[in-house]
Image 1 (cartoon, rainbow, N blue to C red):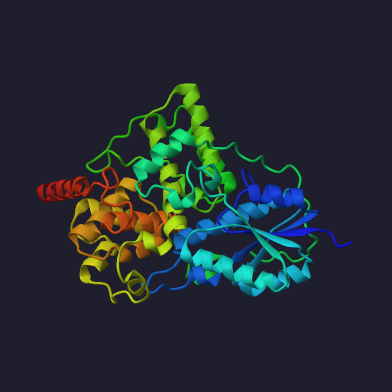
Image 2: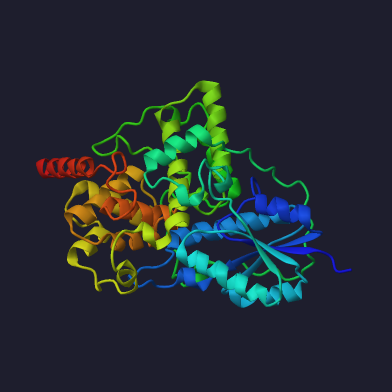
Length: 427
């Protein structure tokens, strides 16, 4: 009798803790085959003449996959690394390793959804099931107080009803034992040069990718001496600029949103809450909101006629205003400082993102898709739903735009005007 073997296809879920997909695969199989595909489509030039994945996030991804490999090796196993499109290799892998089922986490972005569909179609030829899991949100869709089709489009309503009527589940335990499919060649971890990048440059204040690094950062963040326990302060435009910097690990699934949530709740019980705690928990809920909006509406979330054509054939080359914005040469001190920080490190706080996006769309007159595509390349913590959803709302084309509390354009413009005035007086 052929043994039951499950291929576990890792995507943006690079962790062992709170991973239902992995727990289920271990429980339902005799052996598992973990696989990660370095899909070349994620390292190509986009229609906007930007990189799909920039050097900063590519390094972080490589470190995160390396960390997952190391974690599996502690169980006397490994993860198979494949350079290529999943749908091109999945049939060969299922035949070669006698796989009976494939597990993976479902995504909500149109490109990621199309890849899942292509893999599912390929597996159907061998009558092998592709089982879908959802492991990127704080709340499971079945735990929401409404079906997907009835989720409120206004964030404040979504927040109120969800916090009142839904419960965040406990985390799944980290596996204590894993049996792996026998294999001799597990594949070579690529370097940035293998993904199309040139000679590496030093990255100031770079975060380390991987589950272990994410968990260590979380624990450090919640120590009594951490800055998160104190009210943030700073220069003009920075008063709301505190960031836990957890988002990079969340975006690749090195940290589970539920793990972060329960760690913060435990800290609240020990020492009480504060504004920074609330900001982190609110950020988790915004992540859920955008993912569920994409699940509910898809491309219809963007209330802009002709958007698909605009994305496929954007105006090229960039206008002078957009080019100056990307380079941090707008003449606005605050915007330029934030954009140069983004270009150098791959990260700026959420408040800073609102400022630079407001400037591009409402001051420089650039189309919001130009900014969204540039952030897609540069952000260490890029997540399709959150990135494109935020940009659409700032531009006033998202379904959540125009509602009180969604986005305060006047506030952001005031910050920009104040920074410009300060810059002039200094000069």
